[in-house]
Image (tube, rainbow, N blue to C red; front, side, top):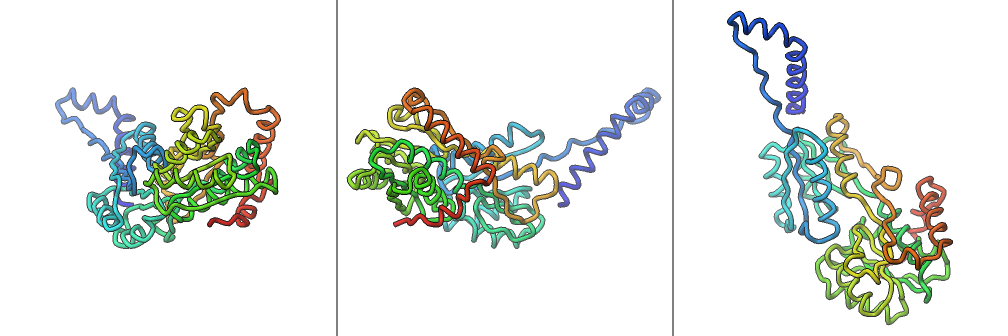
Length: 345
């Protein structure tokens, strides 16, 4: 890209000026003009979000990732727009492109169509859609291994359930959410094939009351452990589990502080790793319209803390879970195949 080439050339010019510092100082002493190398323009990174950064879930993780780029790298400028409606997605993409942002990242499969269309219009700009569809040139996609992450949460649920019935709730029925729920079911049944998995989608990420009612329905059906992957609507599931005094296993963000006696542990994904991974590829000139998947091996997925449950969970359960995590990372468990067997109603 032209702008990146200019940055490289400017940095090279700065290096030359440092190497020749003594001769420049001598020339200045003899009355010649001092050569001043202009500062390189910052690399501009934009983030598009379908929801608010305060959702304690999907969008909050993405914002954290953007801020990590800003904190860990020099000469970078960031910007974001949250709660973008479907009708405005293309307009926001184009707005950042017209402002000559270098890397424009949209967080979620729901941006795939808009990203595909706008990327064609601006071939000199790098685009990326999380869980999207790459175009082989300037539109890349990256995703966390949500099946792997869900499998960890499901294994926890499978270990702690007493009724042998666990519930998994997803938000919108899109690939990353479905992968999480299916992975959860597979993890629970990996512990015990007799465990019943009740899995369903709410169809949205905002309705906490709906998520709470679904939690109550699952409890009535025998579930004593619940997982929800529905962004801010997760709060409804946590509240429902707390009110009925059952377990909740988290994904994405640790919500133990909201319900310390309910949230047992969390299969965490580190959105920051996903975003710095993209940015490193961009800096190296290797972000070329491919698909990338990261998980345990890259430190993007990991087990959270037991908090107040540290002494309540048997050591044999913890050891079993650690063995499972190691087997997931090594490929010893064909978790994606197992997830295909889980049905979502």
